[in-house]
Image (tube, rainbow, N blue to C red; front, side):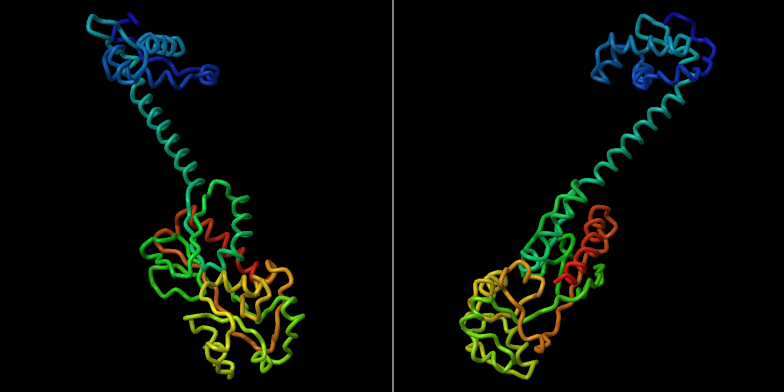
Length: 313
């Protein structure tokens, strides 16, 4: 590093030199150029001064020209150094942009999506689907909120919601996935001791499982022209998972989603002539995060997997 400052600009490196070019040398060169000394550059990069001196010497050897002249107070750039400075800064900025893009792409492949669904859906419908999602998207962590309370997507209590009612908020993007078919059902052990009803009118002679404070089942009977009171139900609970377990245990006849039946060996559907109206199944997400890559991938996966699962029941 002893040539005068008016050293001509170096010729471009040959193709062979570029094949073996160490891009770290540019970082060290710019640090020395900006700091005006090897010591100042070492402090900025938290590196050793001999390391930076070696990097500069290697770059000079590759380019075939000296880049700095030593002075008593530091180093002075040669004309060659000044000639390549702008290109070196573009190279550094390009490397930074590349690293940023790689980090963003890596982050886009990993993250957490919060999904809310009813306790019934979270217990019997979603687990096999989420297992498949994990196989397909190992970088996505899913937080499953199992609740019969409708989580508020507008307050970001969840990212995606699976609902049996159509979302009304205009800020939500919602897709109708299909219908949840409902059926009267009982375990074959119960039917063996109490008999199998062949007509809806025979239900009054059976142990029925109903809801406690929720009047959904009562309204369903009324809609079918069979008004009953809550006293018609031998067992009552508003916990939907406990309700299903009562049916699966053979406690009586209940009214459940057909997609639950494969999970309850021995439970049989009854009285198809009841014609219980199905529930619509909706998938909803806040419009502002619908474009988020992780959220969109989970949304699209469920939009395809849930209808298929509902059809399989």
